[in-house]
Structures are given as C-alpha cells and as structure tokens.
Length: 132
Image (tube, rainbow, N blue to C red):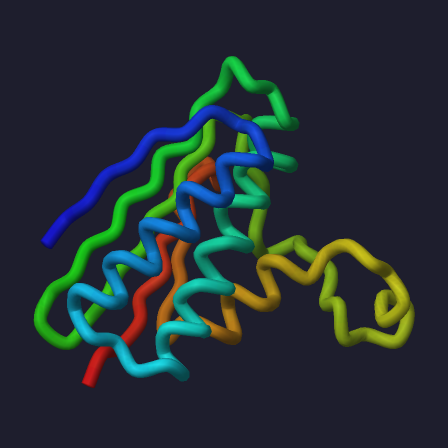
C-alpha cells in the first residue's frame, strides 16, 4: 500500500495528515502504542516542513508518502525549502537547551521511529516503523 499526499504549507493542513494517518492505521490494524509513535513523528515532520522548510509559504508544497510493506510502515516528508544539516541540530536535553520551547521535533522523530534518514539536501525525512 502506498498513499501520496501533497499539501500547501499551511498549519491548518496538519488536520489532513492526521486524518489520513488515522484512516491508514485503522485500515491496517496498527496497535495503539505504535499508532501514537507514528502519528506524533509524522505530525512533527510535516509541521517542520511547513514552518521551517517552507517558512510557512503557502505557495510551497509539502509531499507526504505513506508506504506499508510487510513488517514496516514508512513515512516520507519532503518540503521545497533549502534543507538543513540534521547533524547540527542542538540536543534539546542538554542543560543549555532544556528550557527552549523549540527544537524538539527532530529529537522526537529520532526517538519515536525505529529508523530515520534524511536526503543529502536535508529537505526530506524518511522514517521507518517496524510493524509486528
């Protein structure tokens, strides 16, 4: 199963993504704990693409691809921004950053997914979740 979506960079469109994740999870019968991890990581990725990648520019699109294979659920989120270096994201658990209200999205995605990768440009994240 593969489902591709394209949304404009508007925070209101997070509802569309949440609805699709709900539909897919119900369709394939994902357990609640795994569902929560997939939903939160996906919402963080799409939010980052809208806010940081595309700078909230409604003329720019965010592409989201959901792929379900035997034993794995894959989420790809790509924006039209210039990208970033994922290795240079500050650790939000470091004492200097602990009170910062921003900068937790990549940390959450890394800790909620079973595997995560970024394209070379840094404008696409690929998250994999193992499904029992």
